[in-house]
Length: 272
Image (cartoon, rainbow, N blue to C red; front, side, top):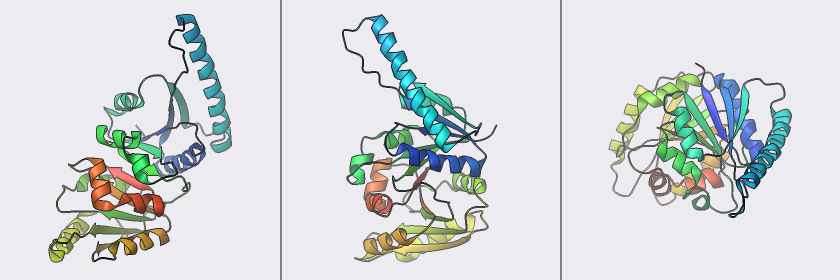
């Protein structure tokens, strides 16, 4: 069975960009695209069952029309994309659809006018990552057609590293990746030699024909160095693994994703 890419959308101004990137990933992975929208019917609390059904079907009709327009503009006659408006909770839907599959991928858009705390904390992206053991790609609103030519992979000896999951993902995009950089943001009391040895150990286990290097960011100015390098990178994705601690803690306290993803507009891939 081919890979399946689930794309939850909300028909906001950023949905077009999200779908265009998802289209590219479907081509790269030869995957089926399943676009899903959680409906929110504006039903008055005292409405009768007949009125509730009428509002629901009218809402579904309007949503379907919006989808057909997007489908025509973005996919044309592509037969590998389907659309499903759902009434149930999105997370439960994704749990049910992916529970027996290790070949699914979920692409979610990041949107907002503030910092990533306002986007991630309490958001569906966080909940999807924490509750589902699937690869999730979180895309900033400014990115639409980023080819994964360069991968920056965060690694820390304090947290387990699922090398098998990483190699499985790399195998799927082997023909696209040209450069891999294993990175670590050193803390004040970290032993740099131990970190270097750890990154080299991970490096030796990565199965890829891409050029592989390591980078440890240190010192008082390491944040600016990291920001500048990420911002200048083209066709670059940042990869993190879900790990044992919560997604929110790992991102915001250890990898400063607020700036790396939002400010530098780097798409984020989270691997279980």
